[in-house]
Amino acid sequence: MGLSDPQVWTVNAVDKTMPRVSSGDGVAKFKLGDGTFQVDFRHNYGKRGRHNVKFTQNKIAADPFNTTRNEAVSMTVNLTVDVPIQGFTIAEQGYVVAALLAELAASSAALTTQLLGGEI
Image (cartoon, rainbow, N blue to C red):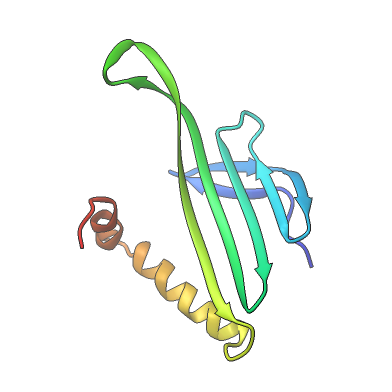
């Protein structure tokens, strides 16, 4: 079973509908028509399995050092699950991913704020 096409992700209560723009051996890319949002999925198999989803936002922002100039900037959020070929079921992997996402998305968002603020 493949990933749904289009991918619809919600950013700040606004749906971003991204159709599939390319796919290949273990990779798929979905992109918003204006290029502002993109999600990439990648799977690599070797001694370990690596499953990665990368969510990117692109925008034009004011240059803080030259107020007459704007420049293209982007940010990316990655989630990589790195597992041995055997030893963890997909369900067990899902439990760990769900725990991480739940902590980052907790109603207070304290952990996310601390992460983005550079706390250790």
